[in-house]
Image 1 (cartoon, rainbow, N blue to C red):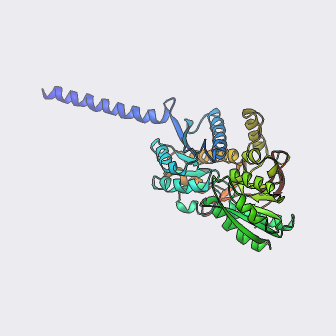
Image 2: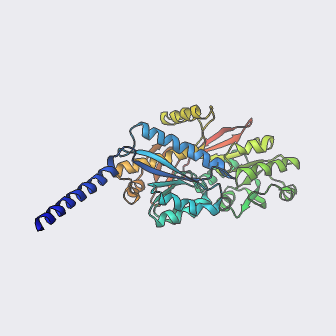
Image 3: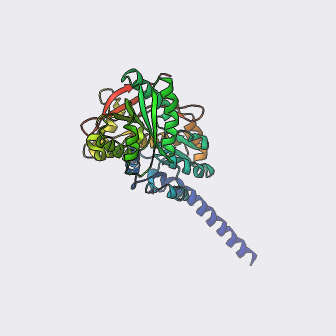
Length: 388
């Protein structure tokens, strides 16, 4: 009886060993096993352009990775987390991505929602890489929080200098979207820059996101003399604000950050936004683009009816590639393992240019592209190197 019992125990132990061994093999080599990258953004709603374009860039990166053999012997898969441009949904969507075992979260393209998602990713030790959060106080939320975009703190002063020295602006009206972290942050950066370069703020006006009637604010502007408008909000409100300015006979142009970057600016604003200026960390500049960037532009156009990529699609592409290269260097898709390789990124060549992370994990990027709305499209007005 004992002999039979020992034989039964031996068979059971061998079976368990085979099952465990099989599980380990399945995790590493089974066909169809994937490394999941989460997309966090809005595919609908007020900020849909940012989310849709970021996702397009991410999809192109994943396609390139998989066509080249995958990552650590596995295919890469995007898990989409669409919050519909609704900040109240951001936390639950972020948490859902984490429960789906993503190796990283790419997003959000906006500063405000990134700040909502960051503590969740940090507490779960999942890397978050924003491809658009350019405002202040982002990476300070945790050592798993990164971004690959041109910072407002770098770009706004550079553009202000250009407005003062090249366009000879002396006085401006400053328009802030109250309650919008991106806008309030950008305003706080522009104010000292304007003072530094001798540009006077003759009036400050506040608006609210999703407002569509700006007659009172523009009437207040009409009482002042100024050379241009510094608008720190998003494209929907920017377009409508400029239409109201033209309606009231004001002909000054608008300058602002990449929150204005979207075809909706000129689709909604029409003739009213001609001459408006938007800075960005990426633009289609084929005369000076390196081969990798030209290849990205051509592939994007082939997939999008010859439309041109913008900052969000390009930075979405680079965000995935940065994560992928860190995973390869660490030989692990575990964020607690590959995070250190990401921190060490120096002189990394992406489609948006060269990226290094400083001691605070902030991206160091140059140059600044200043775009101008011309004939209902964005055109490069000037390219400004970052020297300070």
